[in-house]
Amino acid sequence: MTERRLDITFGGVADTRGAETVPVSSRWQRSEPAVLGVLGILVILLLWEAVPYVVTMKAGTKLFFTPPSQVAETLWTLFASGVIWAPLGVSAAGFAIGLGIAIVIALPLGILIGRSETLNALFDPFITAFNATPRLVFLPLVLLWFGLGLWSKVVIVAFGAIFPLLINTHEGIRNADRLLINVVRSFGAREWDVVRIVVVPNALPYILTGLRLAIGRAVLGVVVSEFFGSDQGLGVMMVQAASQYKVNIVFAGMIVFMTLSLAMTSLVKLLESRLGRWRPQRAASE
Amino acid sequence: MTDATVPRPGFAWLSRKMAFGCVAVACFFIAWQAVFLFIPFNSLFITKPSLMFAALWRLTVSGQLFYDLGASALPFVCGLIAAVIIGVPLGILMGWRVRVGMTLDPLMTALYASPLVALAPLVVIFLGVGIAGKAFIVFLLTVFDFVFNAYAGVRSVDPLLLNVVRSFGGGEKDLYVKVIFPSVIPYIVAGARIGVGRALVGVLVGEFFAASEGVGYGIVRFGNFFALDSMFAYILVVTVLAVLLTQGIRWAERAAFPWRIGQ
Image (cartoon, rainbow over all chains, first blue to last red; front, side, top):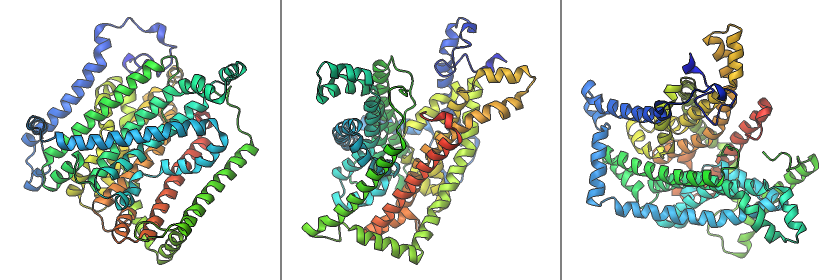
């Protein structure tokens, strides 16, 4: 029965009422999640690999099926032959410029609307509307305005990444401690000083959370914009591969996107937990 | 979190905020319309609000809008329902059976983080451009929202409640019915709020790739014809629908689970 108890295994989520009953954890208990997690992934991969040996597929289905070993081989070939670097570079450029633009716009705007209720009231309907709308809906329009190529991609990426950053910055700025602001004011600080000394440092963890969400959306933006309107990039490579039934390349591309996305997100997460160690865990607002 | 420091906004302030918002939206449309008094208007690249609303009216009257909306709604709903049916039990299982959770967590996290939209071309080739393909893309994009929210929901179950049910002789079934399921529901609704946005993306991706009907197809087709007024009308419809869906769920959350406000 103890296996089903929820209060022990999940530190952080369940409360600590059961904490005193927790036995001293052995090395196995501490490493169990990691071991089981790796095993889970391995089992899935093995099952996937075993499918063709167990089931006989029709020729049509075979076109869409590829075992993980083949995907790994393709991935290796792509990197070893250097074919992947050019499209990856194009995608990375679109990602970086778009995210940069999003940061440059979102942070000052977030601080402004966080400090001024009037500006907030004015901007709120637009932020709500554009945040709820899938950015994809503007893609045909953006293609019309900016053409195929880098700049459409940049616009889509920036448009997607702005909102999580903006909303989280705003949230962080608004949550600044009134007491601290009043103290700084009493010592003669102006609005600029208040923002610089109290408000922005307080908002930093929120901004990082926003950045983490923004990275996810930016990667999504790169993929989507390259699927529908671009001449170069990893997404273009994947779409072309899909239309030629080169399923290996599609999966390889997805693994590259996944790895990059995970790496960047966990980097920001690390930064987040370092900077926000004193703060209770907050649910990130998508 | 900082309830003590942020005063609760009063009714006067809320209505003022609403008024400000309406004024801002009105100003936006007026400015958009007015810009073309000063710069030349090229109907190939931009449209005016007046033309946009005229197109919206035209499309509504002709029934085209409802036809496309219906075509998009079916895969949207089917995909979401499939995601709930598969995602929620999986999430509950992961949360309840600790070892299952440990085993599947990294896999699910990796899949959740990966841009699954990237599989869309394969899905479209494999399942075709009809309802099945679109619904499957919607399912792929939303199922993890439900898995992770149900997972978090089970993990947040108060162990005290479980023990109370057990002390009064409740069995496994009672635990599910009386404790776990009720505490998971708010999380599922929160998952639905996030999932709805992603489901819209899924429908649009499916329709952008290849379709013969639907809102996303309409936007692309109008774009190809340079019929920007109709295109903007459809974009406006999608925007309004997206806001209504997300805010609607948020409102329902507040009404049904008032104790969860701010989470």
